[in-house]
Image (cartoon, rainbow, N blue to C red):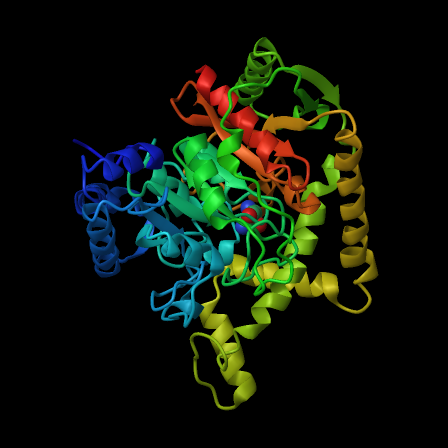
Length: 476
Ligand code: GLN
């Protein structure tokens, strides 16, 4: 029986009832990886040896007749900007090519504590800067639905692994859409929790006021299970919230009767592909037929979200990436003196997009420009946040496309960074406002490429968007 394409909750049943063993399941995933990885390229590192140790622990437990945790024995992949003790964590950058973290990120540690089986570390755009994995210093990941196309990014490896049967679920990170956009391009579920819901301890920092870890899964039920595993306060991350975490499986109820769903008009304008627009309007009709109420609304500052994001994110990135100086972290390229050593290291080991962001960020932060760019962006950030606060006076959730178009061809946008940045129009406002958002598959376009819709929730109200997503999924 093929196991690699099943969901975690199906596999949990099979494991617990001894119909399969964790050894069989993991072997099936690795044989699938052996079969397709040379075409997809989702991984940067495979962790077969580590997997073997965990497999044995799980199978021993099952044979003793003990109950196993929901994700125990389930093979997963971890984005390679999430630290894993003793396992190379590169951020897809030459500067961290040989970096082996001395500790686990909290989100991964929580999965490991459940005996989830890590099969490897997943490709991304260098330091999570990008939307296609083409900025990886090592290789580009291919979309399993069409190998000539990108899987999206920056969590492209995380989405492609789930879609291609190379992991049952994965963790990604989302600073401006990096979980939701690849999920949409690869036809899987991708969830960005509220800022602070999941500890960022051990997530290599890109833009600290925006970064958040979340799951990519085959269905909404698995998404709830992974959220249950990774959410919660962490003393090691002062930005993680102390708010109590609900049991997200309680949201797995097919019911949207009376739910008010907002459709913001600014997300259906020029630049949105006609097929995407039709698909999202069909999703709205579907919700209506299931008993929800659709409310047209306006988020008036949406137009400024890209400029705001592409000032705040690079400014924070420029600061965060100062630590790669050839002394404390990562690679070093020697020079005649310390300044030359640092210059050589950063010149040789950072890729072009990372350098571009460092330059934009330092420019926006520099004396004389700070007020005009960075400070202005912070003010607009407040306006964008207020748009959502106002909108949520009248609706429970907001429905939008996840991306303006389906997966594009590899190489199609690399020559035009601005065009690539505009891809993020539907996702960045959610990070700017710190809200939860999920991308859910909604069919394919005429080229058979997956499409996704996005549901945005109130802060800390992951439960409602999860329930709406579940209701839609069950109606299919
Ligand atoms: N595509 C966006 C960027 O390039 C988002 C990246 C992310 O969420 N990590 O910054």
